[in-house]
Image (cartoon, rainbow, N blue to C red; front, top):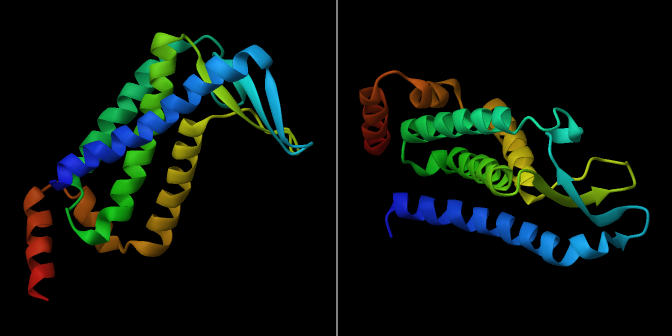
Amino acid sequence: MGKKAKSVVIFFVLLLIDQLTKLWAVKILKPIGSIKIIHNVLEIYYVENRGAAFGIMQNKQWFFLIITLAVLVGLLWISGKIPEEKHFVPLRACLYFVGAGAVGNMIDRVFRKYVVDFIYFSLINFPVFNVADIYVTVAAFMLVVLILFFYQEEDLNRVFSKKKEQNRAGRENGRKK
């Protein structure tokens, strides 16, 4: 299986996990409301979120769809610029997770008119969230860590350079070393 095919499979597996957990929440959790996993710490709690994180911007579905589409276009653009080297696998993985999370919540907004949230940390009264939110949050954190501590400035220049030839030249120089 080629690298592009693997990328597509990884993306769709992540998306499938998100959608299956939401389907479980709708079919099993919605009728009962909540399940206490760890008393006063963690609950599985069904919520129909018509807004964004922390319940802000309720009923602004078109806004969220436009923003999500813009993010996806940006992710595709960046993904096409990332050199296909082992060194850049962590960066590419972050993009898969952000993309799968964005598409997962977009599917909810389009077909349900709300996002299914169901994970609730009652200990700190944290807003209810879902697997897609975990993908985006963890990937965003990892991107910050990668940019600050893993990738060098020249690595980032290769990703964000205007010329694809610079990326090709970088790969060829990397092979010669």
